[in-house]
Length: 149
Image 1 (spheres, rainbow, N blue to C red):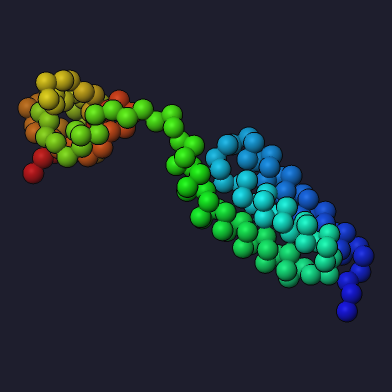
Image 2: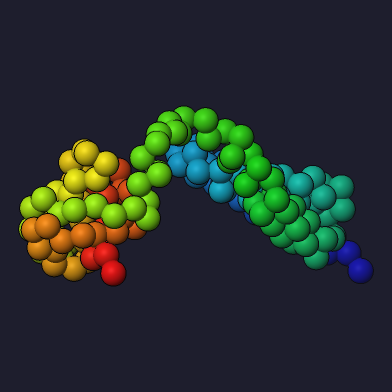
């Protein structure tokens, strides 16, 4: 059973449109996300050219190729391309104890002293002067802290 020529042409246009839209989206975000869907659409477009009646194969190829590239290739490529991270020793502060040098309320900014240096800090709880706090994370140039137990 053969499909109508208009259905085959519609599928070609559909895969071409998905390819173009995904490529434009990737070019505007550079997030290494939609490029994989563009590749899946390209493979499906080629299948639609060769076997215009194989709509199930086109959809399956789109899903398999896109998923494979997104979940297998993207993480490896993203790690390889992410070379602009500047490594600092500040990560070693996570888990350490600091002393509050200014009292501050939950959500506000305050200051803590750790390893002889003053840092801006934020917390989800009120912190009093001279309270000991544990560093949970580093958010930009601020320490995220909580009261030490």
